Image (cartoon, rainbow, N blue to C red):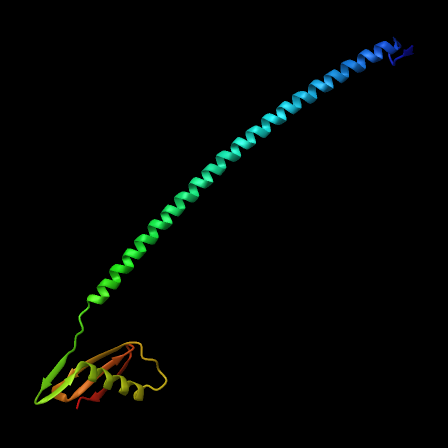
Length: 152
């Protein structure tokens, strides 16, 4: 027999009973915790499955959109190629006082004169003005370079 802090006498049987009660309480708490843990794990698994399904659906939707966009781009490209193939080849020839000259010849002359007049500059745009009565080709290159060359 032992005396506790309050002065009461405690027997070995009382300690054993108290220990058994504490052990059963611990076992019940452990079982309860195990059940709670299993429930939490199950909930997390369910949420993961839902998220996985949503991700798969999103991937499929994105793949469908990409395929649709690719088809649209292909169709647009085919139409552009078809339009390019349908363009008609043209040429312009001017006849003036028993003289004849083409637009292509005038462009070549104007380009050559630009290269002589503006050495080191790059030709980006060229507009020509043909004045047969003056026998001249006037040009405006790159919107700020002007000049002329003889037509004949």
